[in-house]
Length: 135
Image (cartoon, rainbow, N blue to C red; front, side):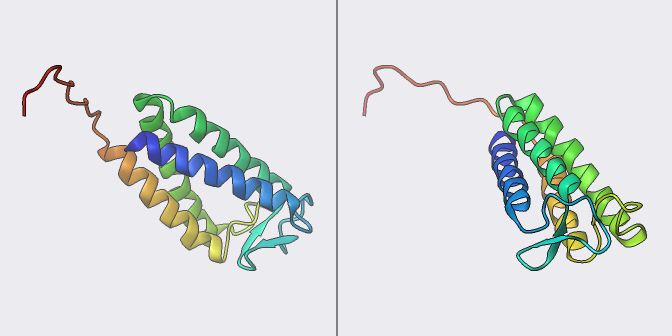
């Protein structure tokens, strides 16, 4: 399951990064106010979009093995929980990336899902196929 979660989040991060770059103002470096708003709710700028693309590539690559996917989910989940807290304290990350407002609850949700999956993941083994099983 953790491999699938890493792949899904990786693809979503890639799509969000691309959509952010294509949005009006999505290639600006301003953070306060955010130059672009995805879905009219989430502030993004060039650096924010690059971060999403990097997390996306990391998630897709990590989905290839259980251990890499688990590590991705644990680390990315923890980082996103930290970002959620930082959104309250430094909503523009010192003028670099807009992470306040609606991004706070989004980062908290992403962090909880990824960390929850990552820290509870157990490597499963598929049941061996039985050749010539009688019915």
